[in-house]
Image (cartoon, rainbow over all chains, first blue to last red; front, side, top):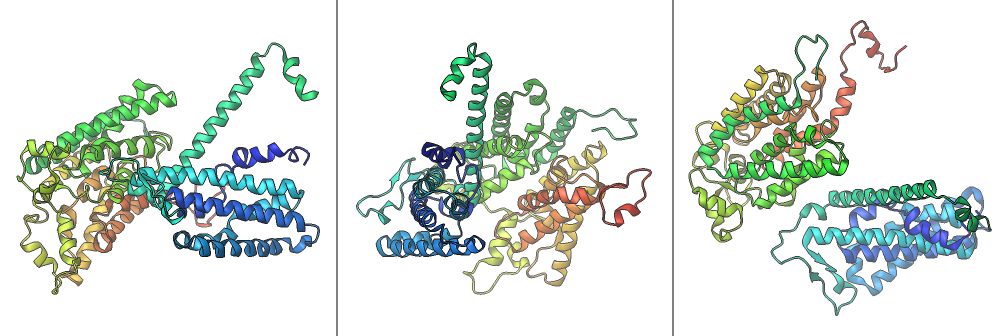
Amino acid sequence: MSALNNLSDIARNGVWKQNPLLVQLLGLCPLLAISTTLVNAVSLGLATILVMLLANFAIAGLRALIPYEIRIPVFVLIIAALVTVVDLSFNAFLHDLYLVLGIFIPLIVTNCIVLARVEAFAAKNGLAASTLDGVMMGAGFLWVIALIGGLRELIGQGTLFSGIEMVFPSLSGMQVLSADYPGFLIMLLPPGAFFTLGLLIAGRNWIETRANQRLLDQRKHNDKPAEKTAPATA
Amino acid sequence: MSNSPYLLKATSVQSVMLRVLLALLPGLSAYVWFFGAAIVVQIVLASLTARAAEALVLYLRGKPLALFLTDGSALVTAWLIALSFPPLAPWWLVVLATLIAIIVAKHLYGGLGQNPFNPAMVAFALMIVAYPQFMSRWPGIDAIDFATQWDIIFGLHANQALDALTMATPLDALRTALHSASTTTPATVASALANNPAIGHIAGRGWEWIAAGHLVGGLWLVQQRIITWHLPTAFLATLLLLAGLANAINPNEFAGPLFHLFGGGAILAAFFIVTDPVSAATTPYGKLIFAVGVGLLTWVIRSFGAYPDGIAFAVLLMNIAVPLIDMTTQPRIFGHKRGHKKTGKNHHE
C-alpha cells in the first residue's frame, strides 16, 4: 500500500490510470441512460462524486467498527443512507432536474463504482486517502460521462447545455450547429452511448500504447542509463 | 475459398465481387426504367465514398492498399446500400451510411472476412432509426424528371413540394392503410391495395419488375456457383409459407405471399444480402437455419412491427446468432462417427 499512499498516485488512478468508466467499465447503466445531454451527465456526475466522497469518508472512519464478515451489507446500508440524503436534496433544491434524472439518483446505491471503491480502498486505507480516492474516482466518472454527454448532445441534436435552465434559471442552452441540422437520433438512443464509449476507450488505449512505446524507445536509445535512474534511487 | 476436391481453381475475391455487381445490373436496369436515373447518382456517390473510406482505413491500418482496394467488396457494399435506400434521399444520407458501413461495420470489426454484421444492413438499420423522414423518399413512377431528382438529392429543391413528388413504397402503403387509426372502418388488404397508385399487377408497381430483375441476376449467381441454393431458397420459402398461411387464415389482415415476395426488397435480400459469405452462416444446415430465421423475422417485423421493411433488422438479428448456429451444425468430419456429437460433448477423445 506504500505506493498508494502517495496522494498524487491516488488522483492519477481515479482520473486516468484506473478510470472507472474507461478502464474498469463500471457504472455503465447510468452512463447509457443519462448521458444524453451535457447538463444531465454533469449533474449525475456531480451527484456521484458527492456520494463517493461521503461514502469513502464515512467508511474509512468507521472501518474499525465494522465486522469483517458482514461488511458488505453495512457498506450498502451506509451508501443507501447517503444516497437518500442526496436524492432528497435534489428533490428539494433542483426539482426540475430531479424529474429528469428520476430513478438514476436512487440507483447510485447500486452503482458498482461506489461499492467497488468502498470495498477496495476505503475499507483498507486512512481517512484522507480514502476521501481523496472517492473524489478522484468520482472525477474520473464525471469527466468521461460529461464528454460522452456533450458529444451525444452535439451530434444527436446539435445543441450544448440544453436544459441548463433546470439548474440556473437565468441561463438557457445554446444551438451550436445550424438550426436546420437534421440531428442524428441514434446518438441520443443507447447505441450512441455504446459507440461513443467504445471510441473513447479505443482513444485512451491508443494514447497509452503510444506513451508506453515512447518510454521504451527512450530507454532503448538512452546512452546514459545512470542519469535516468538516479532520481528514482535517490 | 477452395474446398476439398481441389478440381476447380479457387476464385479470387475480385472475380466474385465483379460477378455480383454484374448480377445486380438487370434489377438496376428495371429500377432506372421505372423510377428514373436518381439511383445511378446514389450508386456513384456510394461507390466513391466506399473507395475513399476503404483507402483511408487501409492506410491507417497499414494494410496493402492495392490488394484490398481492387477486391471490389467495398463496391458491392456501396451498391447494396444505394439499392436499398430511397433514390431521392439527400446525398449526405447515402455518404454517411456508406462511411458507417465501411469504417464502423466493416473495418472496426477487422475488415473483409471479419465483420459479424452485414455492413450494408448495419447502415440501413442505423439510418432508418435515425432518419425515418428521409428514408421514405421514394419517387412516384414517371413522376419526376432527372433534373428535379438531381435537385432533390442535392437539396436544391424547395422542400414544401416534396411530399407531392414522393410516393409510399408498397409495404408502407399497405401498413398505413391497415393501421391508420383515423378511419372508422378499418381497411382490409384488398381494399388497401385496390385503389393505390403504388400497386401494380402482382405487388408494387415497378417493384415487381425490379424484383424480377434481381431474380434473374440471383439465379445467374447460383448458376455461376458464387452462391448456393440453400440461403435464398430457405429464406424465400419461409416468407412464402408464413405469408401464405396467414393470408389463408385471415386475408383481411395479412397480405398474400406474392405481395411479400415482390412488394419490397425480399428478392434482392434473398440473393445478395442473406447470401453474404462473411456474415451469414457457413455450414449447410446452418445456412438453412439462418435463412429460415431471417425469413421468419422479416415476416413478423413486416406484419407486426413499426418499420416498413424488416429485412435489415432480421438479417442483423440472425447475424448475432451465426457463431452459435455454425458451432452447433458442424458437419461430420470424414472418418468420424456422428454418434460423438449426440453425446453433447464437444471435445475429442
